[in-house]
Length: 219
Image (cartoon, rainbow, N blue to C red; front, side, top):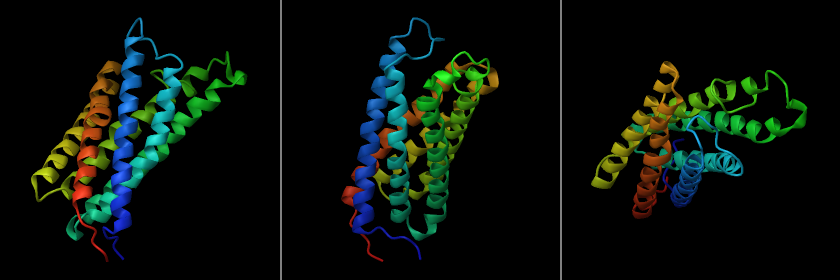
């Protein structure tokens, strides 16, 4: 049975969209503050801002999944195949990035790993490392596919069309962040950060407005 845009789904969509915006703004503020504090762009962001960023990412993921569930409920029948794909990819994003950042936040702090030669490769967030590569997969691939598949769901009026354009822009910018991997310059990942930390929160805010205006559709 297909999910419909019930009153509960509408409330979930509004709350999760606004929550995503709120935490994304907090993430952007902490990120900018961290970057401005660096003596060199090659240096990692220090504490406590690094831990704040990790926690904000983990907290944001359930909200993004909930938002995609609400979008899937709101989507018209002919577009639910796209919203379902978006939900699957955002779930992959959430599972992978939460695992990465939780491990970095907890295990990497343990004294048992201090001084081990392989520690930077498996338990650090510096390039090249396994956690960094997995997080690139999560955000520059899974997130990008999630919003690109969600984009066709929004159509019909000017507000929905604006959301669709922002979703596409967010996905394309996130994919462009992969260029940093191919050329070996992680500064190019900033392109992707603009997509998911800059453009997507604006789309989420417009989605909250759209859902607020949309009446529930009972099954």
